[in-house]
Length: 264
Image 1 (cartoon, one colour):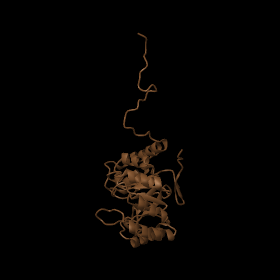
Image 2 (image 1 turned 90 degrees about the vertical axis):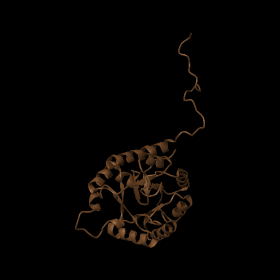
Image 3 (image 1 turned 30 degrees about the vertical axis):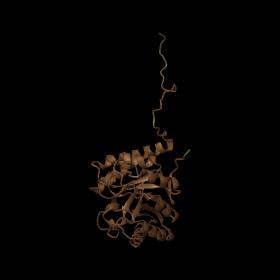
Image 4 (image 1 turned 180 degrees about the horizontal axis):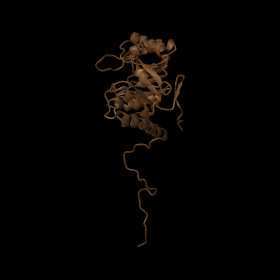
């Protein structure tokens, strides 16, 4: 039987398996309410989009309770290994944390991950004792390379960032999960709660999302829906679904016959 232990990521442990981003909300108070409704324990913050030096005005970090949430800085917006490593180092100094979500993109049009630059940056950050969660494509070979290079978690995309298309290639996600020794967190492309449930039913250890909540018509309600979907999907995975069959299978123990209720 699969044990439902806490999610361990390097030195960090969590009971919630939903990770929520902080971008694209209309207001910071709305973001704050959505985070609370999601029940998440980890929130991601794009280092390049936060002015870490300016303490004069109200900013994103003022709306994140550090006693309640663990901040996971990410290198969103980086298009080279050098840029991503520089951003991770900045986050470590400014936010006093040694873990990071590594994101190195190939181009601004598709926003797909660059596997070569991601691996290069990962190797450098691991040598510098970072705990690295590596965002990548749904390629099982690339996922294995990242794990072998020291990623604390591999984060394959469900579909392109912000697309809301859900899990486009469940077969590849399942292969990545089955072959992995580290936690697998599905990241990007989640549009609604059913997408999240699918990822968890495949056996993912968690789901990271942002746009699906932030740009929903009602972000707070959607955040709660995502919370429940993660829990339901995880329970379904642990319970074990029935096998798919090409033909009907009667639910009656008498193979479909109905016992007579009276004697004519």
